[in-house]
Image (tube, rainbow, N blue to C red; front, side):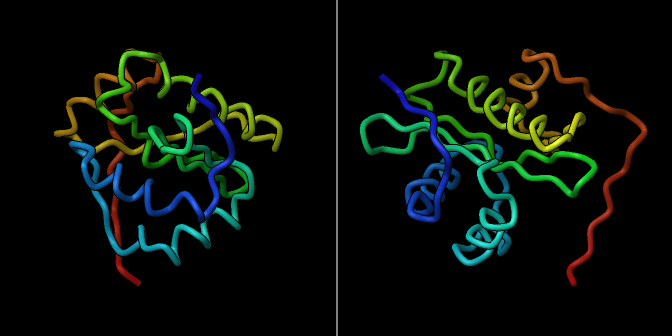
Length: 138
């Protein structure tokens, strides 16, 4: 049926196309092919895609800093939602983090991303209050 496998840079074009049409997902220059290739190599084996035949229908970017895990760009094609594919992608990446000795993981979700916030709340993730995120372009 559907296969979940390690994401490679060869999945980039189909993945970015999915991200671009995923409501609530924010993209930036950090999502260039070069940047995603670097991320995948730095976090070898952590990120996954879900494919239907040869078509990417779901993605998860996952990595860690040696202490905490981080998840980005969990997306499932609207045509395939409701089949627990997002949850399976998350479970797959969390297992890989645990094998690396990483026992805590974070995801940042844009406040107005209704679909994303509902998904993470439904799947048992706890929303943190009292933490502010600061960003800087280097």
